[in-house]
Amino acid sequence: MNRHFFAAAWLCLFYGTGASPALADESADTSHLRVLAGSCAACHGTNGNSVGGTPVLAGLTPAYFIARMQAFRAGKLDSTVMHHHAQGLTEDEITLLADYFSRQARVTSRAPTAENH
Ligand code: HEC
Image (tube, rainbow, N blue to C red):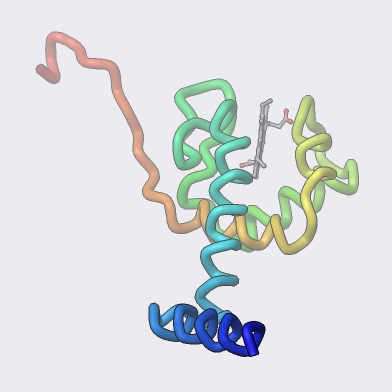
């Protein structure tokens, strides 16, 4: 009796808030993606907008991004560090990151000079 009550209450809570299993999956994916993309930011800048030294990831097409990551993973592309990072990612994670970075706006920042200010 008690178990049924709790099960029913739980279902009401779950459906009452409009949450669906599909949405729950999506938010889990989103936070996983945020952690993954955050690990790239140290070298590739916020949202993939590198401030120098490393390639800009923002705005890369998914096809190009995936091809580069797979080449790093397979050791087919010269790399100082990226072969390590690529090997730590699954195919699905690479696809998620490719989609994420392709949707980031490419920002080019220029230092202020006497002429442009
Ligand atoms: C420790 C610094 C560092 C981190 C962290 C890092 N990268 Fe890189 N990345 C580089 C460097 C340096 C290169 C240039 C290739 C090389 O020397 O390995 C590069 C190149 C790339 C390229 C190729 C771009 C192009 O136009 O050829 C992609 C794609 C890439 N990184 C994606 C990522 C992703 C995704 C992450 C996070 C999961 C990440 N990187 C984390 C330093 C880093």
